[in-house]
Length: 477
Ligand SMILES: [Zn+2]
Image 1 (spheres, rainbow, N blue to C red):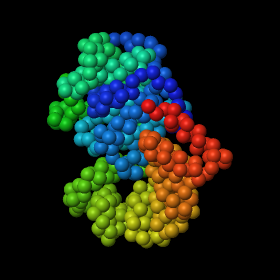
Image 2 (image 1 turned 135 degrees about the horizontal axis):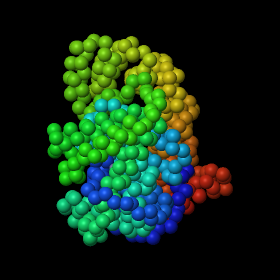
Image 3 (image 1 turned 45 degrees about the vertical axis):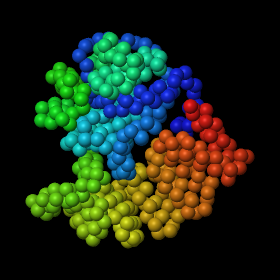
């Protein structure tokens, strides 16, 4: 696994970095990267990639404590799918990209060196299409891929720390918390690079969107949207945008790039899942009543709206009103029989209702349409597990794990099922896998050590585990 292979050496003070990262969390943003002064970006040798990976991992560990991350398999998979689709035409990357959703109403998304991208729920709820969101994610990927922060900060990780402080300079109390380094550099030339890098992120992001089959015009629509938000709803904007409004120049440049692109066929999903994801975000915030009210109204206007029926079904499911959930999801399927998303949700609902036959039928249809969607395999595994067919559950979870090896969820489920089968070595091993993917090294170490005890040090598995333990210990500070 790549995530444990980088023992690496480190040259700087991690407690200091941790402190700076705490204060950085809400500051770097998609809308917050523009600046006033155009300048050339120096072609310095950026910091080593392993250091960026380390920064990303450390940031994620802190972010889990400081930010409210949305942990819902369908939502996690949705942003991951967008990210992977954007990355796929780019070929092999020097590090693993990870995508997260933060429960926060501000329109924002931000990128951390080393491949970690956070998208606010407020932004997902505001966009009109997945293509618009892909525009933002593409822009953030460019900041990471082109190593913008390292290019501004220079080759020394310490100056990267300083730069992270600079990002805080507009934040008053936050800036003070960032300490002397950030304060000292806040007024220097450092900020001047951002405008050029911002233009690069806009231009390349739009190009990557088109390469990946998204509609690049959606990036323009998004820029106009945040401009509109600035006027209509300044309270909800990231602070940086209020002092650095979106420039017409930025929009004009993106327009020029979009027009210069020869856009091929877009790889569109049959139904854009954005409405469903927006609804799930509200349901996760316990807003089922509001969702029911909204979509009941829509259903009144159009009794055959598959979308209204689908969303109502999900909302009733959240309220454990099984009969109504079932009725609405079945009607949604009748209204839109080709939707793998509806079949997947039906399969999950039937599983929860212990109606195993219909659950298998629905999930088989979903798998027929989307055989490589890890969620379909995950819910199939859950169904087998509930039926007590544990070997089949293992196979389904393994498929989900292999299709999305950086997602902790399938590995975690594998650990649990192996536990039920009394295969404790495997149980500890997969629990450790999921904990490593979730950046919980201490818990992972404990489970790996138990797995090693059970496997014995002289087996192949035992040797692999011993290597992993050594690698994790080497990177701990
Ligand atoms: Zn940017």
